[in-house]
Image 1 (cartoon, rainbow, N blue to C red):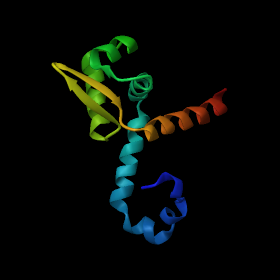
Image 2: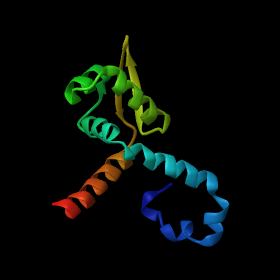
Image 3: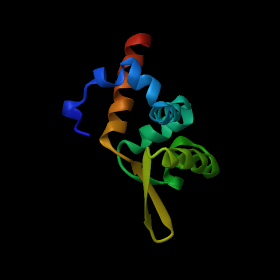
Image 4: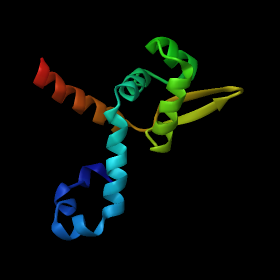
Length: 114
């Protein structure tokens, strides 16, 4: 879908809202990924480039098993993607829209609290 031609009007009318429960369920699950502070830390850590689980864990001072568990959720929701290099798996943000969601959310919260 072309973002430049995107318009919310198509998605806010009663007919569309009633007949697209599956899309709304997926959207809800997408946003649920951002509801956990640990997942947000992981995503913010990945904004400056791809990293392996060990690097993310050491940066955030978390157990690798905790990071792996959250990355599994983020991967399932197609928010991060992986690239295998030998026995190492590197994680990266799936697309620029994820960066935009994080940026807009952070700007909004900084206006409220700061």
